[in-house]
Amino acid sequence: MAEFLQLLFSGLTVGAVYALVALGFTLIYNASDVINFAQGDFVMIGGMGTVFLAAAGLSLPLAALIAILAAVAVGLLLHRLAIEPARGASPVALIMITIGASIFIKGIAQIVFDKQFHALPAFTGSEPIALGGATILPQSLWVIGGAIVLFAALHLFLERTLLGKAVLATAANRLAARLVGDQRQGHPRARIRRFRGHRRDRRRPRHADHADALRHRHPVRVERFCRRDGGRHGPPARRRGRRRPDRPDGGFRGGLYQFDL
Amino acid sequence: MLAGALRPRLATLVLLALVMAVVPLVAPSAFYLRVAALVWIFALAALGLTILMGYAGQVSLGHAGFLGIGAYGVAIGPAHLGLSPLLSLVLAAALSGIIAYVVGQPILRLKGYYLAIATLGFGLILALIFQSESAVTGGPDGMAVARLTVFGWRIASAMQWYWVSAGVLLVGAWIALNLADSPSGRALRALHDSEVAAAGAGVDVAARKLAAFVVAAIYAAIAGGLLACMNGLITPDAASFMHSVELVAMVIIGGLGSVLGAVVGAAFLIVLPQALTALQEYEQAVLGLLIMVFMIALPAGIVPTLRKWLMERLS
Image 1 (cartoon, rainbow over the protein chains, first blue to last red):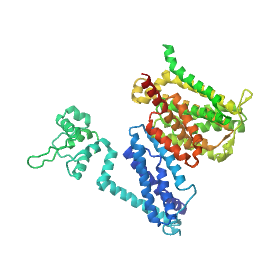
Image 2: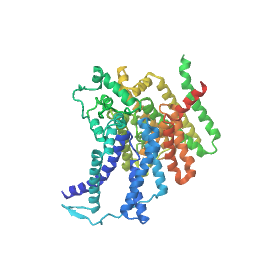
Image 3: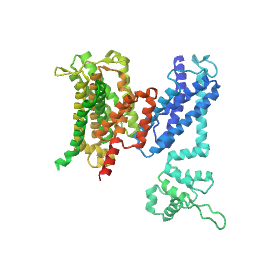
Image 4: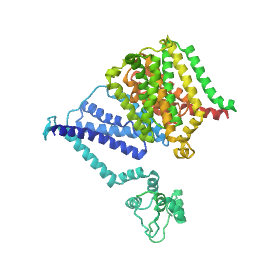
């Protein structure tokens, strides 16, 4: 039992770290369809950056924060300079780009940092805590607790903020998300509600899928799709009477019939 | 009509043979010949991979594992089993084909990224086996390899290895070029474009994919065996993930599905680090940067882009 607990604790600790890395991996894949082979290098930047900044005299939290920002900057540069110019390339080509980026980052890191092993002091001491016959380090508790906090924060970000929902929408269907994003009307919350599938007009027949909708031929919807999204003309300059809510969702609803949103 | 069909294949082979004949004349020392022999050997492995990735459209991120099987086969045969190196090479290639046949059947059902990760895992398994079975494989330090003797003729000098590897590559290229234009090759390209359509046209998709996988594994094993015999030493990182990545990079940078592309890609990735040693510390950074730049600027690869450029200029 004690051995099992010991293995459980160490497994949870290491697993929490890997889970965080994997979360970043999944976010990138869902948003950009790229398997990021340079993900481990971001881990390295965070770690080595903290070590070197702490050695330069900064306090540990500040050093960690700056190292995290540095990793974010590297990720943004990687996306802007390497992934975006190659948009539309085959999956293998994108993998090769990230592998090249990984080699590049490793090469630069060897110059900026060094090639030695490094360690950081534990946050709150290194006295093991006895727990049910096994021991756990305080640092493990920090790791697991920090990971749980980050998971909760990510969940809140994705589910409760507009930007997070936009990320989820892009992951679900990029074209549809772009269609919704193009709409100039409507309160943002209403836009998201519509994307999520709340139908304003219950009288319109629901169709099983896109093909079915086309079969029943809704020229009005198609026309609205063409008008609403063809050019960037936007709404008419002047409106008579009260401002009527427009039906900009017709276009993307036609496209979204095939999805279960 | 037959001449028309033969001409592109013949042209490629003649071009390759010309380059192979010219290099020893301009090489200043034996070191350059050794690098060139290395290029031919890795071009052979890349050729097998381009058959799998370019013709059949599958991905293999664990191909260095098969290279390792060939290399370790040639090492273990004379050392532990008392066979001649040449026989060990043949047996190692056959073993690699058999392992590819057995492993390929479940793995090749996957597609895209899943296939890439599955082959990556398989390559890692092979590398781990080579590293941990120290009794048989000599562990992380590797083992020495007996020199290759072909019918009593010992191949040891750089010049001899240059001609041996060049000859084997020429034969391999001839086979690959013939495959491209044969019904099998057309079946492979059909299933690359659309598996459903190919199946509808009567192509046995699973069997063809497996055949391409086995052929690629045999090419890699022969290349690995030659590598081990040339170097006289083999270590487990011949089968490492980095080598697999290098092979894939050779294929993609040179040009997917192109025989010359495999050779150009191999030359690029083997000659370049030699040329970059002048940069010392910056070598890895510049290598990564060049891979990225080539993949972004020439997504189709060097040889197809050159070919297109030449066609546009000549027409």
